[in-house]
Image (tube, rainbow, N blue to C red; front, side, top):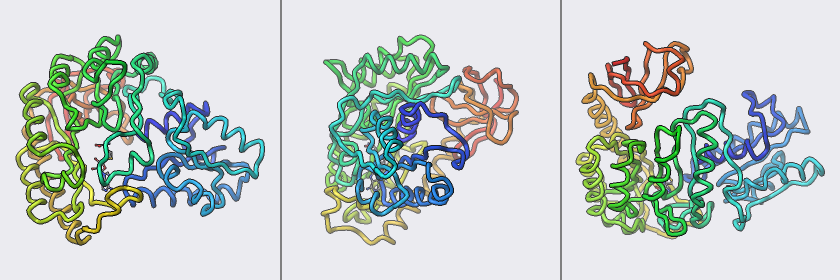
Length: 420
Ligand code: SAH
């Protein structure tokens, strides 16, 4: 989501990105407020550019994204070298804002309004020939998860019109994209004028030149039988689903206001796996929410043992301002939460490796994306299941092509493969 917004920020200014910040005329730090750590990082990132501003007073420095939305005016007061803050919904207005600042140097700007009419107006920047790209199909979120700051900083759910989704997809395909990831906070709740998410998948399949479709993040409660069968029948939909569970305990899920039970989650996974046995599943887990007991945590550990996710993004609960969670006074001890997080992560590392080892000497279709950063003779690609594969016996003409690869060596997060 943030990467996509950064690409829209570039396009909204018709900017040429530079590698070195000291070569820039404008520096915009795009930020995330999901956990306290991320939001501290954002403020210190802006601090780093103070020296450049002293050297070059014409340099414009701004902060975009959810931290900008959350703290707005406070940031302008706190950081004297910051010229503007702009919320995620205001990106279409960024160009005018920067022009205003250029006209009147003393005028520092705060744009954090939520009532922007055309939130999707700006398309993302896409480097010519880049194999994969993102298309936003939804902004904001209507769920009310007790821990989550997203509805506060990104507003209510707005679904993008089908026509615009298809137009932006065609634009990226014409610029070389072969694989598109469709993004939204709860992407599978997308609906527009009677069309549902499973209809959208059918329309996307028809796009010429598009080889692979991914989407993220799916909300468990919005998995429908129609969605499962549409995924199964759609030859372009990748065999990968990110389905955040957050906890294995019904008691905690209820306090989190996740709107599904663990039985519902299990049942959805079973339906998905029955329809697509080669589906790779990943999830998000929050450890230490509210008064999570040893028993609640054990239920989360049991769930990961049972489902054997390929990847888990796990976090220690972080209290966020303005969320219902902030008002709860039942939080468990921080050290206990941290111990649980480490336990979960170390077991998951083993599971990820065990899953991967089972795939050695098997063949998979890999979309080759690029040469690796450090070695122009080694190439990187991903399988339909989103597994990273490094390949040596090919050359750059393979970039953008889907090739059959045999996995020769497995690691926790990647493979080494060769042409089958
Ligand atoms: N809208 C998406 C995810 C958004 S944030 C969804 O509902 O799945 C990505 C992940 O960050 C969440 O799934 C959750 O696991 C984690 N997260 C969100 N708020 C958090 C908080 N306050 N503390 C710790 N982790 C959090």
